[in-house]
Amino acid sequence: MLPGNSSELAKGRWRIGVRLGSLLLVLLDLAGATSKPHAQMLCGSDLSNTTTLTVGTNPFSMAVSDLDGDGDLDIVTANATSLDISILRNDGGGQFQRAERYVGARVIGIDAGDIDGDGRTDVVVGCTELALLAVFWGQPGDTLGEPTFVPAPQNPFEIRIRDLDQDGQMDVLFLTDFEDSVSVIWGDGTRAMQSRSAIATPVRPKSLAVGDVNGDGHQDIAVASCGDSTTFLLRGMGGRSFAPAIQALNVYGTNACRMALDDLNGDRRADLAVLNSLATSGVSLGLGQSDGTFDLTMTTAAGNYQADVTIADLNGDFWNDLIVVDGSSNDVTVMGGTGSGYIQSYTTLPAGASPSGVAAADLDGDQTLDIIVVNTNSSTVSITWNRTSFHAATVGFRPSVVQLGSGPAILFAEVSLPAEVDVRIDLRNVRLLWGNQLLGRALDVTVLDSLAGEIEVRFNREVLNSLGPGYQMLTIAGCDSAGDAFRAESVVNVLPPRNQSIWQESPIGRVPVIIRVSPAVASTSNVGIYDCLGALVREQKGWVGSDRTILWDGNRRGGSPASSGVYFVQVQTGAGRLVGKVVLLR
Image (cartoon, rainbow, N blue to C red; front, side, top):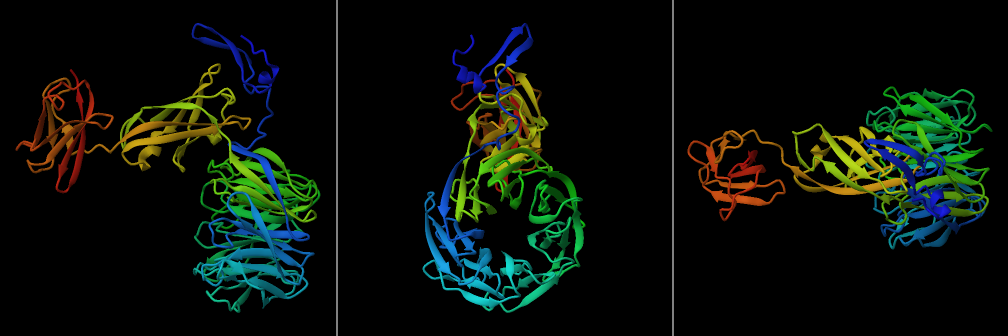
């Protein structure tokens, strides 16, 4: 019977077909075939709610950190025209209280971190047009003190607080308008801020990013001038030593400018997302290589004039996504990552006037990253709240009882999808979870019944080897090609690895069952027999004979016969526990 409500047709809630014997003929599939544009949502995320907060005049940059030590992340902006910083204190429930700290100079760059090692967050801003950094030290009572001014080269900007030399103390990096270098004030755990180095670069950089690009465990620095197509890399050599800059990525016809470093393909090397400052615009992605260069994977359009980019896993699929703000169209573009250095979906969100900076952080403690944008011309901060959005499915795992280290190579998940999710599942997003831990990704997805929304997902069974024995709740999650997400949970009984010290010696079908124990164990050892659900069937002390055998008559406690099936024998010895498997067949 066809639905009578046309709005339900628009939602893609109906599948129509006819079954001829074992052949399923789909006449019309309205569950996503024509009702939804391809890949227009970020799988598993609802990004429809935005809060706008007013700050000082013309903020150019921001930092997100716990400024007052209450466990909630706060926001601080550098306001160029009002010559101050705005502090937005977060109550953890979506409400913010605003306060200002006056600097008295035009400020653009800002970052936050514990520089003096006292456990409180400090804030550093660059005073453009002056040769100064303004430092707001964290004070007792979880407040920021009045600024302390530290000498720096003229017009400092692009402030970053990182432990660059990995000595446990935070360092301050910044750029200036008049030097072909990256300036670093090395932290020593005090408020002295006197040890400064200038790390030479081939160009006068206008942007920088920090990360381990070549996987050697040292922090590297990427820089670009916003005036040509090359991104350069300063490779960290350990301590405060850096190799001469190399050309790490060159994208012909672009002007490399704002950038971010993080892992886009899961190889634990920092990869590059770099924006093009030319009118053609676009974002180029490069995968970090062992020699410190980047392998270009794609350049894609993202608005007209991109102002900033960050990399973060927004939807919890364990692939990092891209977030780009556009200063002319006043919006945010979210690009879903695939784990390969390519982008699979685009979602556009509104922002304020002339957005200039973006960050991702969990502001409300719901374990998802929210999007924070600073808007220069509207003097606001926009927060897009990231809400988990999944449709409930059902799943059954096969086998439902798994012995670690043995058994079939494949774990099957038979999933019944809700009507909102199409059977054309995007394989790249399907994953198996234990709590918040990623166990593994799907090998393939097979459609079992398009009308009923039934699919079969295969995983490598070895992904369960990290689990402990017992009943484990596993979660399967993924989305269809349009971005509608599903999630389902079911229990798998995980048994300990087979111990070759105990085995069934008698043929299957013979009772009593003869069980051989290989190592010599005390005849007084406790012996327990358990069924596949972990329930104790029989227990006896001193059951091991002098010939290291156990005779089980196939009965339960109380004398009733146990049914046919697989049982587990556990022998508790002074040195530990031995476990083996036997089969009872009547």
